[in-house]
Image (cartoon, rainbow, N blue to C red; front, side, top):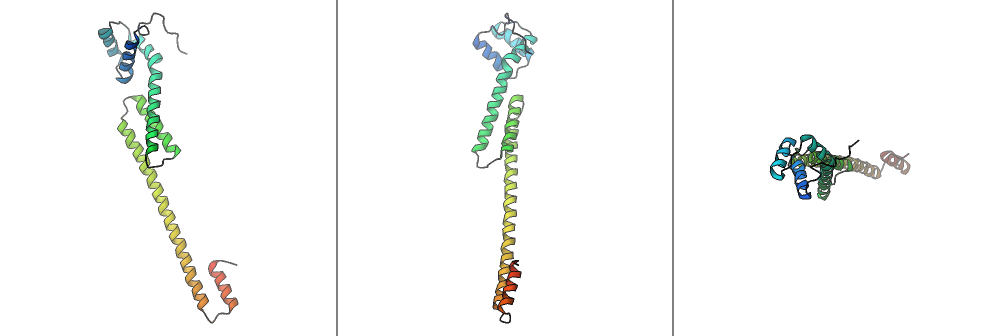
Length: 178
């Protein structure tokens, strides 16, 4: 349960531009609290504590960082959808989750995320090519079987020694009809 903010909070009383600057330091630069205390004193003449900065971060910065990470993740998924590769929902969900984690961590390497997305896409492409190869091999087997049946049927139809009933029985046997 979050506490009610203090009415005399120096950080909440900052001018809007100063508050935005502090948020940028904490969120965008990932500035440690002890360095932020020094910078606040030097640039704005505000004396504060690390505990106050921690409270400020949890109330003002946490949701901002989460929403920025979410926007980044959605952007990465949108870019993945633009590509010529068609990714399945599970792959897109994984990409989105990893993008969010990298963006939220702020120490994550976006290039690693791009590499991960490429690997996932390449793996999916390879799976589809393997499936296509299996289907092509199956088609070849079916065509070879049909060609063998056609050759056998042609031999039966040309055999002058067979009666029409024998010919019909042999053709049914060749094509698996009973």
